[in-house]
Length: 218
Image (cartoon, rainbow, N blue to C red; front, top):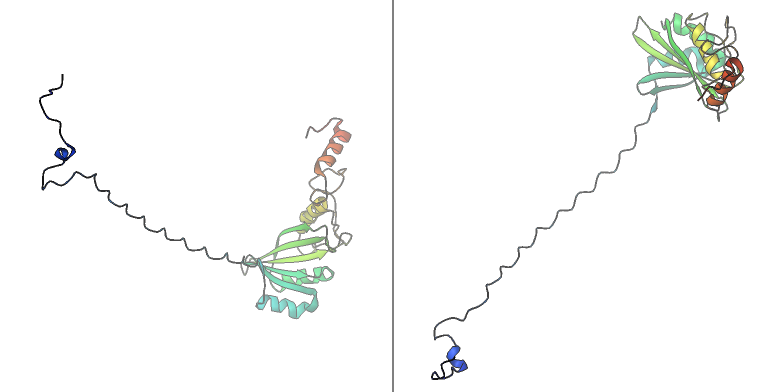
């Protein structure tokens, strides 16, 4: 039971004594603003790609131009490889000059590239190597689909099988080759598989069915 003998306290009696500061809520420390994020510098614009082919003008190409004039259609350096683009009509003469005077005594490789939408559909590419000079030269010879470039077997005997492979894979026929026939595929094979319009699965199925009497399963 409350003690009724004590007088009720007035509101003023609840104030703190003189000189005593009133209680206050804890002062809030202002938040330190985050430093501004530095903008990333814009990346430099991409460099234009280096040209794959650049004109080539050195002593070797000048000698070829002096010897064959307009038959040297172009001279290029492609990824540090020297190319002469030549007229197929003078392929034999240029090959003999390359062997006898420039000492490119080895036909290291001979192949082709198919460009079916181009008037001169194929590029023949001969890679020549000189043992005396330890250097290479590539001859690029554009030829049309039905054109028959001269064989190089009489100049470099290694051309024999290489030209047969070009014939087998691309269908390019070489005039004067001593025995132009397939070398990788059977004689009865239809078409030339490295032409870009060739349907390899269709031809494989047809040959297996005709010669073996079964489906190839591809």
